[in-house]
Length: 418
Image 1 (spheres, helix red, strand yellow):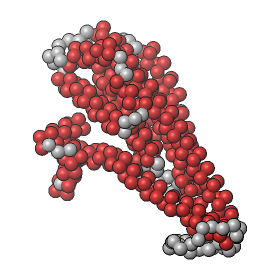
Image 2 (cartoon, rainbow, N blue to C red; image 1 turned 180 degrees about the horizontal axis):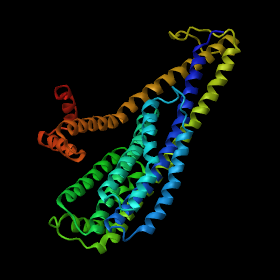
Image 3 (cartoon, helix red, strand yellow; image 1 turned 30 degrees about the vertical axis):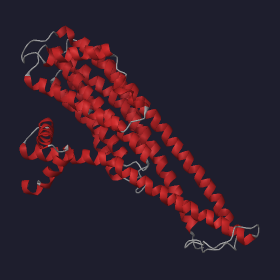
Image 4 (cartoon, rainbow, N blue to C red; image 1 turned 180 degrees about the vertical axis):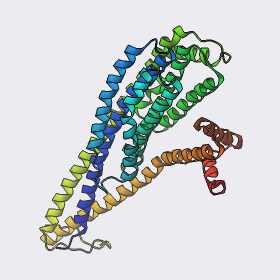
């Protein structure tokens, strides 16, 4: 039997439902990853306190946090297993699954890293670098989830969530940086510059987040931060970053710094949890609506199939047609017109979705370009990631151009740097 246009419309709706269900699983995974990242960020800070004190303090707190991290890690692994890995079932599956494949060995290596930290066989900088690499891998999974979303509203929320999580990660790195400085009792120029870079990076991420949550509850950050809490954070920042390099820091402030920055990060986690809840609700709403549409369209198709006299001349328009009457032919014409209107409505909706997705993904594409440009500068100028980013930003400011435009210029010169 030859399939009709409405048959393919039903197939399109089923594909949309399939994509939404997969997106719902991916979005659930994003929330689970957020909880693991939060736990690892705290473990990283406590590890730096332990290493900064040369193993003399914070061992009990760190051990308890490791137990929590192991629990969260298992939840993420379960989330990975729930993803549909059949070829073609997810639009950007190749990139998403590659990110997951990359991060799993990092999770496998955590026990050995923890053992070395417990034995103080590595320093705070090495421990921080290891955790940063793993968390970056987990956030890359979130990035690909945002990049692969097929619903503009869901994509927008995922982009907002990714940038907020990235800003929170920079806040976590700041906590770890300060923990190492205060616990060891000293700070140098390089660490001070890195600290300032982390502060700037946080604000940059929160600015992008705000752009994608103009009328969203998540905009409560940062306006809901208690003034006293922020003042306390700034006081610690000035103590560590404004003092001349090499001046001794009060080691007794290490716990106070950790607690202060933790309260701020925990407040971020509350916003992140709300974003995750909104994301789950939005996925459920979109899927329910798609299922309801499918039921309506299936009923219309069944009625059309049962009417053998339905005309097929409406595709090219029928301006002269008389108003529908009660006879069978007129009823068939009215039903066929309904089917055609549904097809046209679906086409317009998909085009609108595509246009909005292009707008949302522009922010993700800009990030990709900047990251590629940084990688090129790091490779050919032998710069650190931080130095490469500063070079791009300084060039953009000096030339009055956007950061992404400078990144594009750098990449256009790639062939001459080979």
